[in-house]
Length: 305
Image: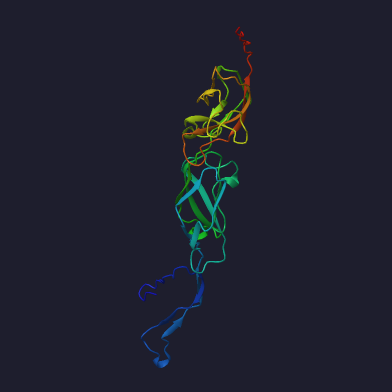
């Protein structure tokens, strides 16, 4: 208290609040001789310091999260760490985390609120990936406590920025065979258009980076079949060239005109894209090459005298 003005001043201790009962005593320098009175005490009064919430303080275990394309559901325990719930003497409170998208690729996550990036009460980050998507999405996360904003309090932490990057993983090419039997006449050649159809370098709905890859086809003998007139490591006798499928799905077969053979030849075909990696090849599809017989003219010889 200022002696001259009577003004009361005080400094508050950070983080503390409550009620304090005080009294003011005044003493002059005139003494108490001859029954004098040199002091006076005021009635007691209260100083009330109202509670004002202090925002929680948080940090991230990492600001850059990575997951592989088509890896499904991702979870990172301890992603958000709460360093402080606020002031040192705050009442019991709960904390929730709010995640907000702020930029980048907004199609990386599957439909539904539980698949969007979330942080649970324990600070674990979770998300569910959409199929065949890759790229980077940027988010902010804030912590919000349950003590409100009365008396100028603050219940929400500073927003922290983080990113989720879904790393491209090549997907196998796709195709269909409208017929599992290709027919060619004995000793002839054939070009069969539309042998393979619906050719894609990745799954339907994938991004342009996936679907713009080149696709090549390969035809091979079925290792579980014993072929006639066939030596290990070679094609059966009667083929002038390997059966081949072009990028547009056309099958080309060249048989030797001089070879006298026909029948069913089980083969298999598969596709490979130019995206590389361990997942660049389709499943192998079995089909049958049906070499149909062509009647040969009779032969004879005239016996000598």
